[in-house]
Amino acid sequence: MKKALLLHSSREGQTIKILRYIEKELVDTHQCELVDLHETPDIDFTPYDKVMIGASIRYGHLNKKLYKFIDRHLSELDKAKTAFFCVNLTARKPEKDTPETSVYMKKFLTLSPWQPKLLDVFAGALYYPRYKFFDRIMIQFIMKMTGGETDPTKEIEYTNWARVKLLSERFGSL
Image: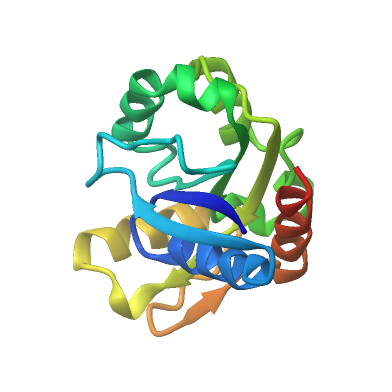
């Protein structure tokens, strides 16, 4: 059976939830290992047929540890069959939910020396009751500016699971 390494750089957990969905989609054809790339700086890529990284955007940025991980493992990533997706609330808008229209994906591709074979962008989730006070206020402010939900009692999942399924299929076929 083929092996897939699923790496995440997640803040609130939606990226992990997306990768777990992908893992379930691949269960018949791939043995998957889900790993936090922040906690595992040294990875042996040899056993894996393919690698996917999912990363979340927080206050307009990917985690700096993601870029350090990529720099450290660039040669292995360049040799592998790879995919990358980012998760953000801006992607809740249909005109900003593709690699071609996402400012975050464009920025990633400009800053990163790694150019994955597959790319995608998914809307995340809004979990106001789970956020600390400062984060809740900041996210409400950002959502107000962008025409989004500001009710602090709401939890909304914007992720398009049909699109996640399509990425799973494309990744499985690499």
